[in-house]
Length: 262
Ligand SMILES: Nc1ncnc2c1ncn2[C@@H]1O[C@H](COP(=O)(O)OP(=O)(O)OP(=O)(O)O)[C@@H](O)[C@H]1O
Ligand SMILES: [Mg+2]
Image (cartoon, rainbow, N blue to C red; front, side, top):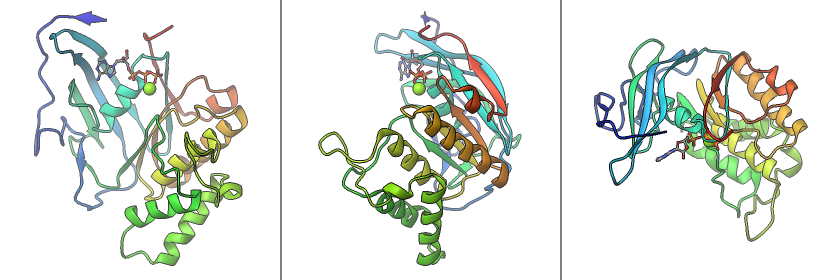
């Protein structure tokens, strides 16, 4: 939808212009404020894109919702309906070319997401093709897990997550890329999720975690995420395309977006 209304007011910046968009941003101090029980609420959230000619395109129009701890909220809708934009908004990663208004609240308050509280698995995999699965996850563990954690414990966590995500058989295979064929697309997807789960975030955003997976692999991944949400109290918000009925049954709540290409 294209509009040429005047530019709406941006989210009220707090500490720094891009780091606190009326509640959500990323406090990259390394301090971990809360890792569990994140109650995420959004009220009257709108997002507008403005092109070089000043033309406005409303992507999200005054939407309200919430995601609860220990639950998986599925975000569904046609391609172009704004699922990724909503995930970006909720996680404080909205692009500079987009204008967001409304409130995003963490546990009822406008506060920043402290480092380690949330994790985001993007729609595209960004993995080093030359590394093996184990190396990629291990390097990620070295970067994300606290220095006070022993190397043995880090390795144990890496091994556990590889096992739980069903990647043991390919743990020592190269990830590969366009030039050299490596693991499958579905396995790449699972590696991306593993890397974000290492730090045990309280809030997990997943953009199409099941895309490219067959129905069995999609169920395997979502069942693991749903189990993790329940056992660890994680709040999960996942944009999902055409889930099977078995995968759909794993969701606790649904946010259905209208519009887009349908
Ligand atoms: N920065 C931007 N500038 C202009 N338009 C944008 C921008 N970001 C997103 N859009 C538009 O907003 C709409 C929603 O995009 P978004 O990526 O959120 O959709 P989606 O539901 O995630 O789609 P898909 O299922 O294909 O991933 C699309 O029409 C897209 O072209
Ligand atoms: Mg998307």
